[in-house]
Amino acid sequence: MANSALERALDAERGPKRRFPWAIAVLGVVVGVIGTLGAAAAIGGPLAIGHRSDLPLERLYGAVAVSIAARLHSGNQANPLANDPRAISTGRAAYTGSCSICHGADGKGNGVFGTATYPNATDLTTGDAQERTDAQLFWIIKNGLSFTGMPAFDKQFQDQDIWAMVSYMRALQQHGSGVAALAVPTATTAQLAVADPHGNATQRGAAVYFALGCQTCHGAVGNAPGELGLREGGREATQAIRNGRSGMPAYDQSLVTDAQLTDLQAYLATIGRGGRGD
Image (tube, rainbow, N blue to C red; front, side, top):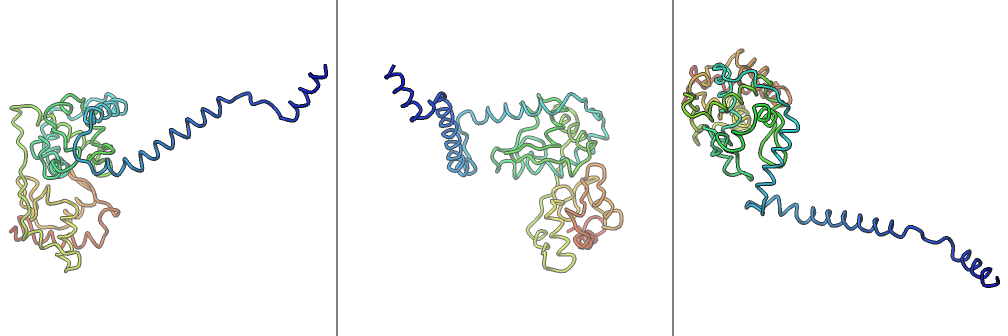
């Protein structure tokens, strides 16, 4: 009896018993995991950004991740412009100006920047790109892919133009389709030298022209083939820049200010079929 009373007194002095020691263990594990992930991000992040050779299974993981994302978000909408010759022509113009710099004029992933990025640009004529649905390709073009060189074009192109780009990509994938890629002349050193953001209006306009990548579609001096070639600038050119047109993105105030547009008009007036074209 005395012992029981003594034990109760000792228990009261010690305080309540710890009934959940596992909670501390779980907390320790969580803190450890967070610390490990933080250290991995701090040390591994810069190394991952700078690496240019594949880690084990990296390509496979990337391909699976893209496939899952495209399937989850794309839906199953059919391409409303499939096999439409006019849409293919529109898509070719949009593709030439916005995609060929990475994916190449013929879609084989051999564009100037496509071979220099990591991961390198996808060959759009075979493999995964050929197996994806039109809806998946549309979603990728519109929304882009994080952690790759693939940008989103939802702010530059309307949905109809993106569907047209998908139609053109399908034409590139079909051997004997009769659709030829457009070869836009590469800008020469002399043509690029005209650009000067601190020069006169024409030189400032050239700087805007090249900064926007207009030469990838229209040529440095408007000397691209077919409908991509430019005539002398004017009101029509201004409307096309601000509002876009079939196969051409729109450039609002956030991309081209009114002052830059005035300079751009000065440059356009000197090039193309109505200008010097040299």
